[in-house]
Image (cartoon, rainbow, N blue to C red; front, side, top):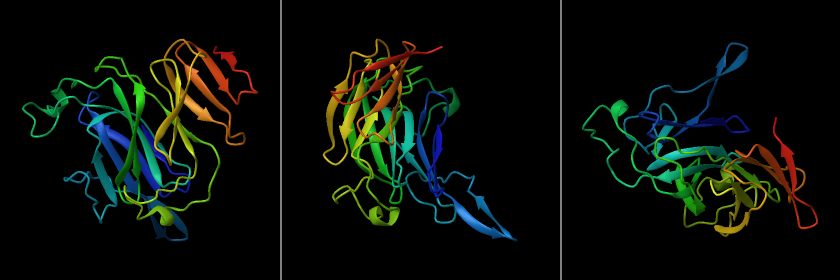
Length: 245
């Protein structure tokens, strides 16, 4: 999984030692260089040896989420990255490895999904949202994607730069939603760090992807393995279904 922030300043992607160990969140700051008459964008390609420590020369950091990464999404203002994860249940994946990392078996993972929220500029985890679950096997966990929604605020990366876990965090949107394996859409209030509702009854299988309407705050769409798309709205709006081709 990989995503670039809307302003083009940051690149976030997931990585790991093998397909069963995709547990590393990689954050890269794009460096704009003057090259003749045009600008060129370059990034560092080397992974730093010490994880969770900024390499000032490469502007690259690798964070161990201590969990299988199911999806990641950069916030609209480019200040945060939302990472859906299923935590490891043991420490067997941690170095030093007894066997080559590429030959390691899939580690046991929790059925409790955690939505980790990382502040990009400080590489700090500011909160962990819980309440949704995953039941698929450790060899093939489902991908569960997220999206922001609600009222839009004008925020800047500079305004959030020093906002640590104990400080007031300002988000550009009020809510974050996620799909789940229990056929429901989960919605959290970011400022209050609480699961506020579960939208159920529209799907009969895993909800993989969600997307918020950027023009109608109270409307979002969800897609499921039951081959349908649901459009969710306020109580005045009925749930609509679209059959996928």
